[in-house]
Image (cartoon, rainbow, N blue to C red; front, side, top):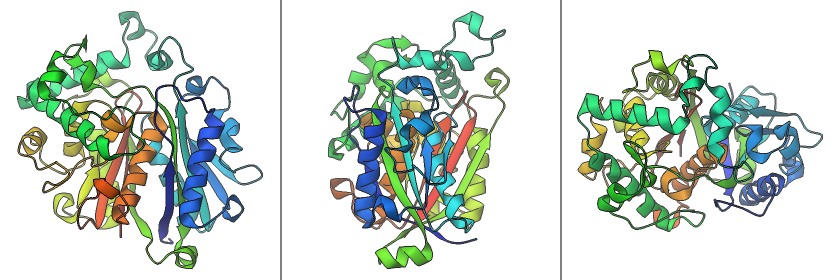
Length: 384
């Protein structure tokens, strides 16, 4: 199995209603990633696209639709789709293209344009619920995430104020991200007083619907040495899918993520994630999910994430920074592109190119995605 390096990354602005088409967003992110790598579209041998439902962009065969913008016409290509886990699974798809020896280079592009779906992107997910046991309840994703949040709070005696600290931190971190959609300086009180959506979820607990794209260039070690003296290596990948019947699972702990994390850590020879990693970009479409996923990634024990957050451990200048980018809560959440944004952030951080967001002495990091009916975990580790 060959080593796989990331040598370039790029992303568009994340916004609520972008004027660019999905193809144009894909092109913009791809061109930035290739320019950063010192390559052109002609230098790329294969393309992996990551997108969530076709309904977001309002087109069928969305992978084929985006292919021209990603420079994939006439080249071997594939599309991956595991809901919110897609953004991290996209570079995993590129990794196996290169690690297998099938290709020396792969451009991985994740795009989502959620604004065309009316009246709200939430409706795209109604079809994933069981038609007999769930749809008659009028259930939505927000509804079941509220159940999960409440269960987590109950089991570990975590308060709404504890969870609100995550939103405060991430929106503040996003003030230093040039692509951020809803960076802001807010307080716990602001979160607590924001509109209640489905208790205990409030508006400022939730990331926004977004349009955007992000991309990265993956190459073999031999190719990497031709373009840079400072590659960033993908050294661990993992994925896992649990049962779609979320009603039958213990919602206070993301077992699906622990399984995916252990797969990635085993590959990367990481035995103690908290000690061997320097920071993490944790999937945070809701503020409670940062805490939930910190525990699933084995960065702390069960029920310990809230205390670490209260104690400042997860601040950008803390002992173990979480989401120095600002995360989905601050930068935005164009589903597949959101996870890919986090992969780009790992690359920039590990290269020392994150500007005001830079984590000091960062050598190794992890990121994860989460999707479908609270069942998919995708994990990727990278190092200098």
